[in-house]
Image (cartoon, rainbow, N blue to C red; front, top):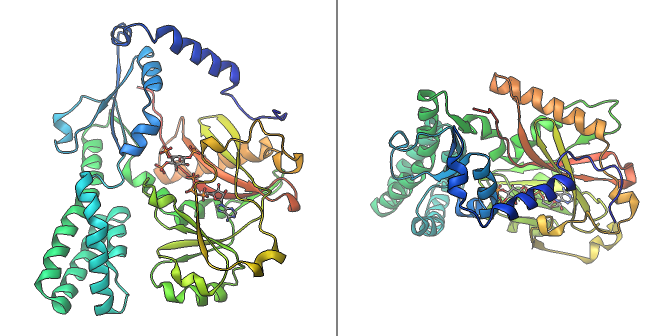
Length: 413
Ligand SMILES: Nc1ncnc2c1ncn2[C@@H]1O[C@H](COP(=O)(O)OP(=O)(O)OP(=O)(O)O)[C@@H](O)[C@H]1O
Ligand SMILES: O=P(O)(O)O[C@H]1[C@H](O)[C@@H](O)[C@H](OP(=O)(O)O)[C@@H](OP(=O)(O)O)[C@H]1O
């Protein structure tokens, strides 16, 4: 059953047209189609293997070619200025390291965390340093890394120092990508970088991602948008229980990695039922109160003025009376992926009701204003995705904002 009131501009008719277009060209020479264009748009891409697989699907590349858009891979090991020319650079690299090295990092990191935590009481874990190297300014990261290395030399001698040195150089390579890209962007202002590293810094961290939304005032907009009550725990797992009590957070809690870098690990979520088990969680984390939402959530995708809302199945409600029967911390799978579509499901209208259009339009407008002012220029076609759940017992329009997945900038060449 399809419920009325879908907010969509990319409707079924358009999807069917695209399908038809792909079918009609799939047997023809797609390259010659591209060459038919007076001017091509060359998109250089630097993506994780996961992102390449999900995003750069053959069908999509084919449609792009028919529109004169070609995708070419960027080689990390060669200077950017030796490659191209590009009209657009699309990037999401997480940690741009060879696969074999990536596998060694958790093992080395674990060893070093053990040593460092012994030596300095857990205040400066290498894990924290590692994440800072990715999300913070290089300057700040370098300071922390230098401090960690100095302490390791004092406390643990040369073996740990050398291991740390190797690990740091790999981690700085991750940050190096942001620096190279920023240099390239400044030297080539005609190339659109999706997105400039400084502009997407806030969406690499679930705390800063939600801050802007929490600060929005959407009074008189057919409802409100807010963030579940939450707490950020950066370091010490043993103090989680007391911090949760101090902040007055009610169980059960959803635990999410604080940093989101596009890796599968950054989407690994846990449900914690009791206080004692909270110490099993691994900071840095965001802990959110579990909000009952009838087992259905909404994904809102925005490109410019187009808004598309889809329904997905989600976690079932947790009954407060049943809570005492559960204990422990459980990892839950990616419950609301594309395969969990609830658009065709026969849902209780109370949970299926879509967020009111005026509320979404106002939210999108407010977010755009904030992004424009933080980027200091106009955004003709901003695009992003966001997850929402609604709390039917408070009225369908009481939305909880969960995540802003991606912020991209569109500038047509
Ligand atoms: N506070 C919460 N209360 C109830 N359910 C929640 C809460 N936070 C998350 N969930 C459930 O977990 C799912 C994933 O949450 P979230 O969107 O924060 O994670 P994510 O890794 O960023 O997911 P994605 O990138 O796929 O959107 C949600 O779709 C929802 O089903
Ligand atoms: O397909 P939807 O329901 O829109 O969910 C997306 C998430 O919201 C994104 O955060 C995922 O991208 P990253 O894993 O790169 O953050 C993205 O990962 P993917 O590109 O590997 O599929 C999706 O899981």
